[in-house]
Image (cartoon, rainbow, N blue to C red; front, side, top):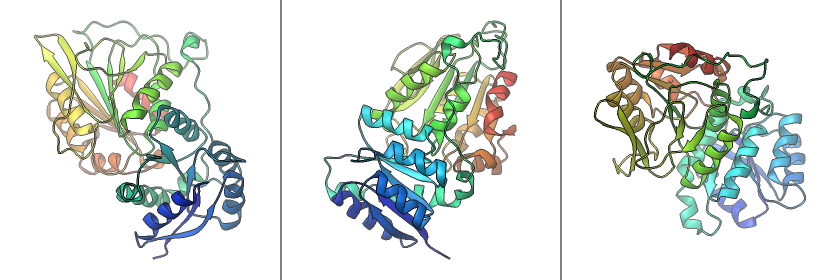
Length: 359
């Protein structure tokens, strides 16, 4: 089997060495070259035609955002951004994803080489996953900015404002959405196309570090018709609100009495691989809203969310999965579909409409 051919673009000689070592140690990756800035990265990408590109964001001459945009315009290629664990790094990363980047890997600019090596397994996993989906990126183009929330009543909106429903008449009392690799882009597509006026709340869990989730919630709130915020411990579940699970913790729905539901954020289970974990999130939703919860699984590596979706199904709820053709990585949806747990399998651009239909 041929090796995955990777181009590294980073202005730090130290990071170029570390990334090369991490990738080549995997045994199935060949580093074709290492560019020192975005301009050189674009030139080398067009010349070498790699399977995957790793891209730093802050670089001289041409930064990673401009380089990503140029590469995706001239020769669409899976690009993994190498991002700093800061709010500013998060915002730049989301801009890169809008321009067509496949995913990102987080780094700490002050960390040691030994600490950086700890992310090797995740990095290699993402390289392999996007390389397998290389054909998906050949037709991928930058995200068109969604209509902002202020324009929710424009005549061109795809949905009329839904009729208000009481808790007792809602088919689905809460929708839980899970995603991982490719998730930020997919979530932006789904949530920005939900109509104003929905009374059903949403709880979203995406594999993302703590420094990123607050910035992502703010970004979604600017472009969605429903209000979006990062979830806080103890706050009440409110109609029509989209809650984004904070990174680094587990988010669960808890119940007081018959109709009083609130959010609990803690570290349990401590042994969970992901924080937030989609299985943990969805299982709590299934318990609190038996027969009246809906689970949605979007693009991502691995199988997180499969058991949560199973729990929702066992409790009589509804489930929806993104189809293979529109996934950045067909891992999490595949696990759900192969287990027979998806009521519907839908392309990304139809998921918002299906959610509205099912709730």
